[in-house]
Image (cartoon, rainbow, N blue to C red; front, side, top):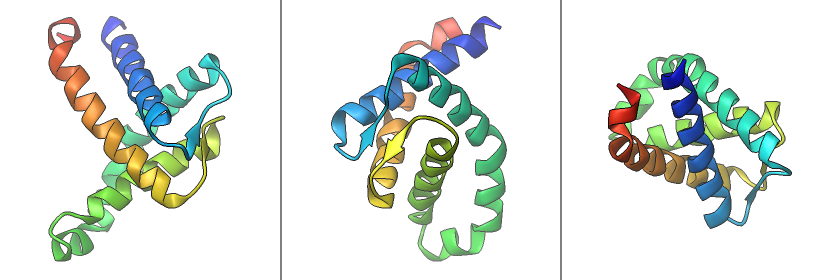
Length: 115
């Protein structure tokens, strides 16, 4: 349970960083940010692997760059079900990149608390 809460908290920080750096991403409250982090974790666990498998030929054709579009789609799906606001699909792609980089960095820093 602690591991799940830490992962959701790290997702929440990553989404906050993306909203801070990108003008097209915003959230109405801290509770909406927490809910967006929970939904984002669920979307990444269930929907993203399906999208990666379905779009494998296109990802192979673009040498992996289509994965950036898939990250944007996951941000858009999260925004659809939460209070997260995205101005354009391009801002969702940028947010997906920043969230991925932020999560990678945060997981490296807090790796001992996740074990």
